[in-house]
Image (cartoon, rainbow, N blue to C red; front, side, top):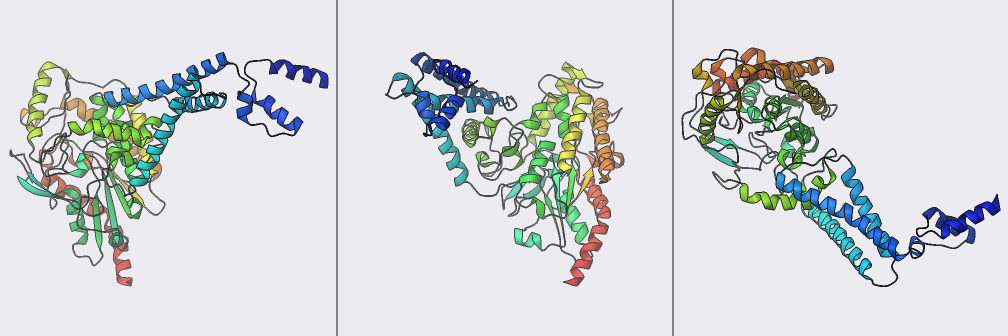
Length: 489
């Protein structure tokens, strides 16, 4: 047997690429330290050439993915394949460098690639070390003026949009003060939580704090982390990475509209695109925390920096510096433009019925909602809200004219939107029952009532008042606990 093994090893040594296991065997048998460098020096020149070619392939593939993803503003999902490509490129490049005892053309090309890898690694480390400031839902300590250029039903023409040092819409608050509050509530959601055109004193989050404080000796803070366009993926990211999210006693989640709209108007990829840079905006987006389920290249700070530079020319400033108004603006002009566009798209192509892939979208929505509910700590409680809408089966033309949702090709009719949204709300109710969570069914209470909406989903001042009063009743028990705590201080 020993003779057979010896002959087998002798034959294997004649191969152009000696396996590493043989090198390890020789180290053990001869008692000498043989490095990988000594092993690869035995390779022949053709092997070196093909190794370098094999290394260039993954390198070029990775670079192409970066370029295409930036230009198309889309995420190329290859599961873990992108990480595997880079690993192969690193390994083969290192092998080519080690197996050359003299500076040759192949070695120089390999060294160039390896230098690029090292440069990216150094840039990645530097960018992350330089920007350690906490990222928040909004810019900190800002006051914006809202001046609607046209009258929008149920809203005041003038108002203010104020953020505090925590980067939340709400009254002044610091982290040390937040920790001393008897009751703290964080409201998470999209534009129906954000209440972009409702002033600070009329948005439902501000009214909720006012109602909870009235007649109470307890200190209460309600922070608004809502951002227009956010979906469940953004909400989960905020709850996991917003630096003070775990300091709140209650989490209120109002979601469903944007996830549904992404299905109706062909943007399902929104769930997995640019989550970190969109969910928390303070500071450069390349400083965002890594998102595990995104492709590796999309988590590179260098990639995000390049993307920021390219996209910087597309940002439209419509008000004071720092107010980014790509979709919405503080004048409300976009609402009028979108209403006209919807009317035109209804004439061009009106869609109705049940959209394709609804079951798949609902299953995905359930999974993501469960992940959001699992993002809070054991001391917090989450309250789910269903999303109400103005849409109904037979809407008069006067109410239909308030709507603006559409895309570049078509628009869905109000009746279908109502049916689909009900399906999403059913998922919310179901998850609440399964997990034993509180669910306030705003959809059943408010949907179809024109007094509560200035468009298909956003709330008038009257609508905000109703939500605040409804939530205040639900939090009476929490306020009772807060009063007991206050009396003991």
